[in-house]
Amino acid sequence: MSLPETRGFWFLAMAALLVVGGAWIAVSRVPATTDPTTVAPQVGFLAPDFTLITLADESVTLGELRGKPVVLNFWATWCPPCRAELPHFQAAHEAYGDEVIILAVDEQENAQHVADFAQQLGLTFPIPLDTDGRVGVEYRVRAYPTTFFIDAEGVIRRVVRGTTTRAVLDSTLAGMTAGPAGDDS
Image (cartoon, rainbow, N blue to C red):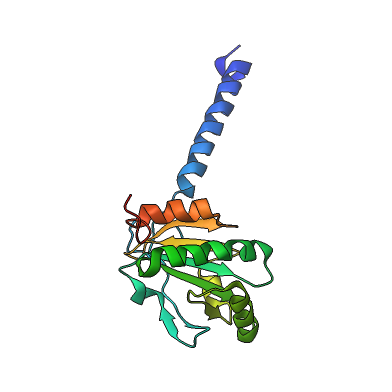
């Protein structure tokens, strides 16, 4: 028998093909660039800029917030996990003061309904309204809540799809700041 006709040869050939195929899949999943000046809604890239109007009828532009870390949360009043995490964002807003910007972008809901909801929960951080869903689409938000942690240079450092726990919020912000106002640790 010649070598190509043996079982061992075909077994090795198939194993090699699987290894090469797996390596190809792994390499193609890595972003083509890690240049932080490239804009993309993913970790390691600049956060896409946008301008929205808040519940307080003020314009907020993400790019103008550079110099401070930003927690960008996409949510809706009908979303139970969103309701569960909003008090954590309020606590962080109170703990960090002006050191961190919390933006909770409501997706496509009536402004008065959102205002009533925010008042019930005692939310005092800015709540921009994405009335047409354009910003959510640009950030590729497919489920609520979704939170982007953006550093002071505007680069996305972490993305949480689903509920952001207090522990995750605190540990991520601690890594992006000197710590909450008044914290000497």
